Length: 218
Image: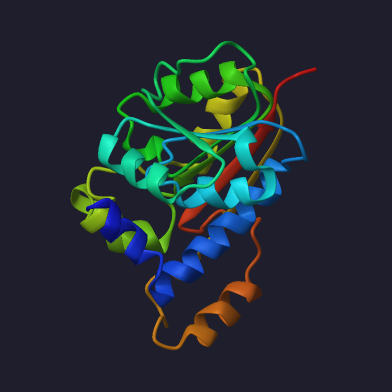
């Protein structure tokens, strides 16, 4: 998918709703405070990065290894900065950022555990990671047999698998939430999908995306 096509998807009714739902959960768990620094690993075109930067401006950094997506991000950004780099070997010193986030990017990294370890290394206070959930209706529709469309080649995580990986890094105060429980159902009647989502709780482990937050020990 081209950078333009990726961004255009977020302009569709389905994309706008999913993007807003994921962003709200990501921002709440990140808990970014004024004047804190944030790194977005696997930022792609900067869709999430730009929205974090609306709150913290130049203190937000996006990193990706795709030059074309970074070019798009730089052309459409404001005060945030964008760097090219590998998630498995982040080019930053230990504890370089207050908060480190990644949204459904590690699902496409060969060694996602190494990338997660790197996120924990460069975080000073908190790590927040969003991944695709294998125990979801989204996986049943888009993830089986190698994945379809933009999900092709993605690794789908288990709730317990992500918990154990974060605990193995010595992180504490784990909080896991999920969202987008009914993907692909009722998109033409958006109010119906939104109403159904509100009847569910983020604490249920079956949403299409899992977002986990964990703190560095003090």
